[in-house]
Amino acid sequence: MPVIDVHNHFFPRTWPDFAARFGTPNWPWIKHTDPGKAEIMVGDRFFRHIYSACWDPELRLQEMDRDGVEMQVISATPVLFAYARPTEHALACAKLFNDAARDLCSRGKGRLNSLCQVPLQDIDASCEELSRCMRAGHLGVEIGNHVGEKNLDDPGIVTFLHHCADEGAAVLVHPWDMFGQSRMPKYMMPWTVGMPAETQLGIVAMILSGAFDKLPKNLRICFAHGGGSFAFLLGRLQNAWEHHPVAHGNCELTPKHYLDRFYVDSAVFDARALQFLVETMGTERVMLGSDYPFPLGEHGIGSLIRSSKFSAAEKGLLLGGNAEKFLGLRTESAPAGTPEPAKPIEPRSDRLTYSSYLRVPELLRLQHPQSVPEPHDELLFIIVHQTYELWFKELLHDLDGVVASLRASAANPQSRDHVYEAARLLRRCTEITRVLVEQFTILETMLPTHFLAFRGKLEPASGFQSEQFRELEFLCGLKDEKMLRYHRPTPEAYAQLERRLREPSVHDAFFDALRAMGKLTIPEGATERERLDARAHAVLSLYRDEHSYRDWIDVCERLTEFDELVVSWRLRHIQLVERIIGMRMGTGGSAGSSYLKLTLDKKFFPELWEARTLLTE
Ligand code: HEM
Image (tube, rainbow, N blue to C red; front, side, top):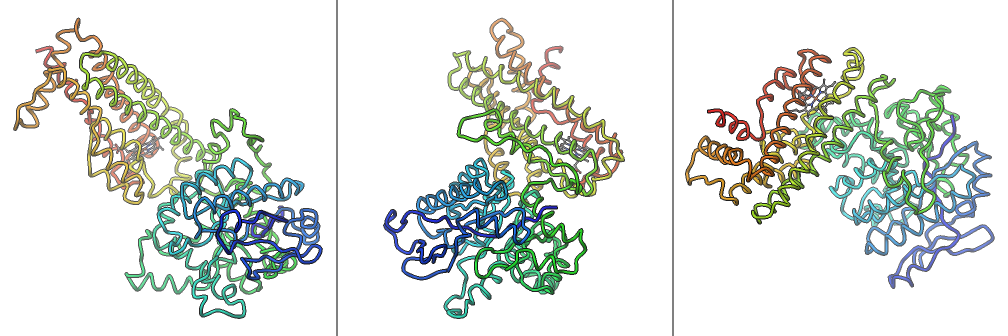
């Protein structure tokens, strides 16, 4: 297994005078003192001695060879984060150092990779810069453990971390801007005391706030310097959680259950500390990190791990195996020795390619089976569900178009163009749904026993939490507010569904259009049943005058067909469920198939069906 150092730093040889460019003081700059030696200055204050390994790839590679390191993943130094400055200044700084990192890596004979930095005070700008950097070849991002008063559980930062997961970007959290500095003016105490506490604070904030519950499990995040004081004080945290309700925060599980959600590096500089760290976090959660080439870094990179009492296999994981997973160089479950999958080709320039337009590399990085060793069919299970979700997205897009067309038609009842457009889009919706009904057959090639091999890993995830499925129901007019409760753990989904509840549905837009045409009047104070009857009679009047309302009848037929196909989808889903888990309960806690059967009576447009009864009377 290769030896990979995930935590080390670089500085370019020179960079522009930011203070002059932006007209603001105290930017970092580099003062070359002797050949191969320099000082980092912040304004007129000395910050750190550095040497040419920071910018010279040849020297870096020589020292990596000396220490037996195959790969280093370089990142900037927190003094460059500029989180307290205006976004445009911090972004310009980030871009400059991000491009400089790629330049250094391009001269690293394939042995240097990089993490970018982002202006984390602005989440949109950070997401955009991260995406740009991932396209440019960075493997992820290094962020500070706070932005001013905001810890890592800040909703904006959580959104950014979501984006990192979507982009497949590894995240290295580095402590910076340490608190209590007025009480630590001497002896490098901000580094030796402040930094470990800052890192611990970052981890604890993410656990107790429930940020880890909200974030997807495929987020790969690592905390520098062995996670600071976290591992040593985990017992204290757990004890507080168990005995003081006030210490619970919003997390779903107790703190020790979150250890498999993040990595830490090995920069603890003491054999017993490393032993304890690995025993606490697990052999799969600690990775080589050296802080090279800074004075506080490990001298003889990897020597602490190599001289530890762990087995050769465990050392292999600590020195590089875990880093391969963290960096996305190897998938979670590929057993050691498996040949590396061919890496998707990244575009080398800004010219659009098939891959860059369709974001194929990102798409192919989004399948993360949870079981180890990976059962063969878990990938199928993930891909089938993801495909459903993609089609749900298209359905929502088209049905939004249907609502817009019907509303335009209500605004101008004489024009038939909008009616035609609504029917055209509805035809697409029925064709998509037909495919969705059929698609269950693919999943039925999975034996019940093969599903059981990984079902335990799914709890408490369930189809109940498919936000888009519920959105589809709401958008078509089946607005059951009770279903919102399954989305409490995901505030964005909850807010989106609440919005759908308030907005006009396809059902509303359709009958508003009939009202605008003079086909529907509902008397004040009418009961629910009388309203439904009035709507059914409005539909009836269209069918009874086929010659004048062919286009509207086409819309009615498409809506009826869509309704019918969604019931077929529900039925096929029930058959699949019974075939795979029989009459067992669902992972979402429902009675399973017998619960799902109750949903078969749900109809989006009962009036369209009622009109048929009326026609034959
Ligand atoms: C092994 C295959 C599957 C099994 C065993 C299964 C099982 C279940 C069960 C038991 C429920 C009821 C809720 C619960 O207690 O969890 C449910 C709901 C649901 N499932 Fe599946 N499911 C499977 C595949 C799928 C697929 C491929 C989709 C595609 C998107 C899907 C979408 C849904 C949705 C949207 C719901 C909520 C339905 C509603 O509330 O009316 N399921 N599933």
